[in-house]
Image (tube, rainbow, N blue to C red; front, side):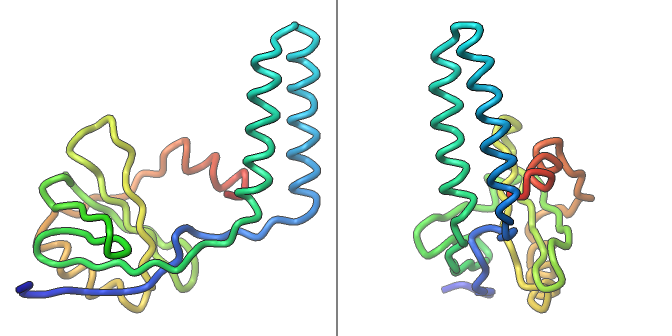
Length: 155
């Protein structure tokens, strides 16, 4: 039996609504790259860009599912199916995402794995922070280049 367990529901990812112009700009850029690929006779690149653009349009329009997260003294449980033991993680950090959500980044001991990002309602952050500090070291969040690209692209 767990000594403590904190449970919360949060979106799978931070949703950023996209305007019609976002889709048009995306299609125009992809068409330009495909034209360049045809001009250089690199048809594999052209095929890859077409597939990537289709996926961007489909995934860009997808709204996040609401997932249940839980933290106990053993680790992080995601949607009751995926478990990450605290021994897998090295450190963690938190950064405000929106007015109501905070992003918690779990950094793995293995440096080749990217950080695991979990959204926490801001009103639950103090309880989560208190219990995580007992298990892992908190560090200052340093945004990566990939984080900056994600925000620029609106994903």
